[in-house]
Picture 1 (cartoon, rainbow, N blue to C red):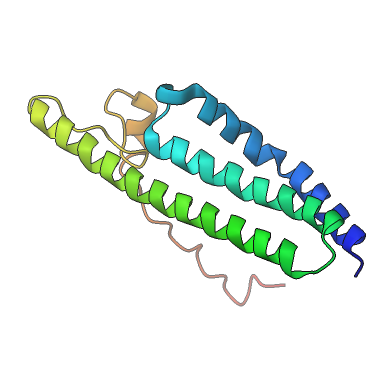
Picture 2: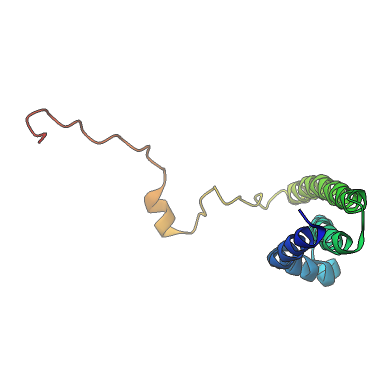
Length: 144
């Protein structure tokens, strides 16, 4: 495959990836308004897509295949390292939040999306969940 065709594909992929990297740029621009783990994750996203854009440019410029491949590997490694760091930071932030809520003592811990809110009447009508029962078996005389 010619370098120009691969470069066109990488450029199209980078353009389509804007649905991910434009919101990530907004998270980075928000600064301290976002948690640190979210900003690091956004940096990982932008790094990965920047690597894809660099790959497209290098495919047009470079003569040999090893230069674009080295850039793609470097971008992938950097994005993966940032994403792993963001996941570790998110776990630390979650533990810190639980510890802070626990120090309050009289205030209940925040509930997750799977636990029912106590003030919702509509929820209390559906709670507790009943397991699904299979439909009754059809008799042989009714089959037909």
